[in-house]
Structure formats: structure tokens, C-alpha cells
Image 1 (tube, helix red, strand yellow):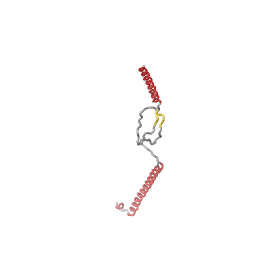
Image 2 (cartoon, rainbow, N blue to C red):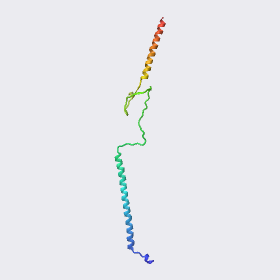
Image 3 (tube, rainbow, N blue to C red):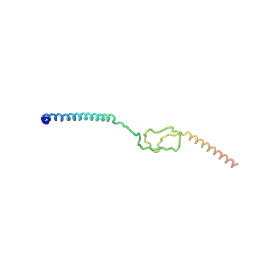
Image 4 (cartoon, rainbow, N blue to C red):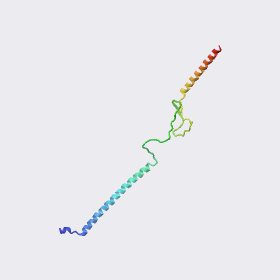
Length: 130
């Protein structure tokens, strides 16, 4: 056993140097691979940002804007819309035209009833004079 305990210092030193150089090469290699991976990732992100620059996207599809409800005094089918999308509208501007056929018929019916009532009143006045 005394022969085994005696080791030459050069052999131990040479073996230790070989072990210390191996991890340094491995560490350098892993840093190089990590650097290449980071470079590829940064390149991909930069390319994506250049390609999608100026494009808008949404994930909730909601519009936030000032909305003003419009209420009409009369109902009926809309014949004409007098404004365009996103047009500025002021108070009193014509927004839509509603079909007035039903209302004109009622006006004529009212005028006919009025003239009938005037005729009946004239007939009653004539009978009073007799």
C-alpha cells in the first residue's frame, strides 16, 4: 500500500488541469447556444413587430363611443336615411324620413269629416232660419 499512497504530483496536476478545461469548454459552448437561441427569439419578435406594425386588433370587440338614442314621435316604415355613417349631426338636422302615407290618409279623412260637419252645421243653420 505504500506504493499506492505515493503519487506523482505531475500526474495529479495534469489530470486536474484536464478536468478544469473540460467544464470551461462546455460552459462556453452552452453560453454560445444560449446566445444563439436568444438572438433567434429576439429576431422573431422583431420580425413580428415589423410585420404587424400599424395593424389594429381586438379581443373584446366592443366599441366605446358616445351613443345618443333617437326617439320618434310617430312610428312607421323608414323611407330614407338622410345621413351617412359617422356624420356629425346637429339638433334639428333631418336624420330619417318616415313614410307618411298612413298619416296623409288620416289627414284626408279628417278633412272629409270636417267638411261633412260644416255641411251638417250649414244644414242645421238653414233649418233654424225656416
